[in-house]
Length: 282
Image (cartoon, rainbow, N blue to C red):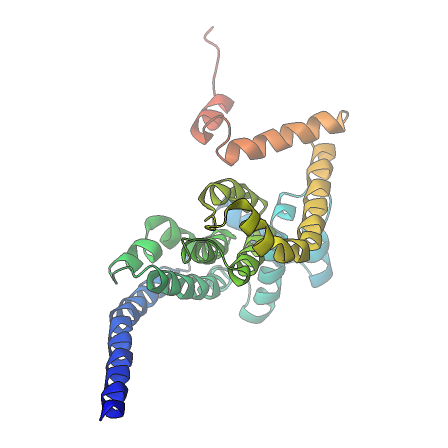
């Protein structure tokens, strides 16, 4: 008599688990439909014109431009590699260039869904993650920001789903998505600061963290080192193309300082922009 009760209880638990996922699936589908309508074939703006200028070139010339010297697009190598390949399939129109964001939106949707389930968040929180004005705006922009947002969603998942400390598997996946984000855009590297402050510590302290994550860190180290060398070369090549090229070290430091400012570690962006247009009264 006990066995049927056990099976019934197990079946009830499974049904309850499925029922708890149903609202999340419904809201997820609504978010996906809403995001699908955010992409429009409007005229491209200045930054998208830079994207078009690169992807519309012949294949080899496009990649040579991305990985060339002193190019701003060199700070987004993985994104431009994906965009160049995608435009060979979808075309070079406004909508075609922006349609790559559908893949990034799908990744963000999946990450947000898993994050909501892991943290047992109510279904209404998903629109806050997916339909916020920033993400909706950059869905309609042929630039890497929707992709970076998706990577950030997955990084948050592996940071937050185990509050007592990251497992070895979670640490490996976190490093994977963090590397992808950095390869999409160099500015994603600044996320290391808030991520480090939010890093969940294991109950066995720092020694436990080192023991658990050391294999993943050692495995990821060559990939991060290669990306770091690439970006270091980008900074110095940009310095050579800059007006301070006669002083390459000073130029590189200036560019690094600008990146730090844009990463929120210096003057606010509005103050930097306003400073460019200040005039001295006569």
